[in-house]
Length: 77
Image 1 (cartoon, rainbow, N blue to C red):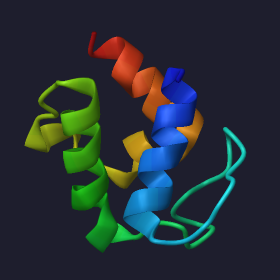
Image 2: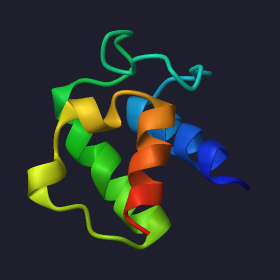
Image 3: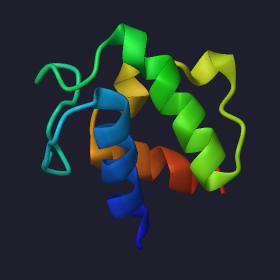
Image 4: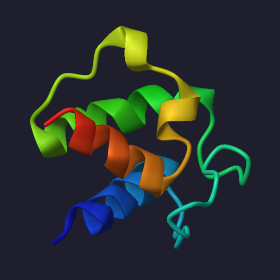
């Protein structure tokens, strides 16, 4: 499973709904995620990709779309 597919699966799990976001779709503006689910998303990403995301990076802007999440993860490895 590639990184993008893993990210989409995590977003589906955190959102608790069957979704199929486009890579650039805003997960927050579309209502898929909100500020309450951001922490759950980050925890799931940390677990899946074996990394620690610092509190200073907990900004919805960095995790606003599948493409941004993927770019962020690539910058951390």
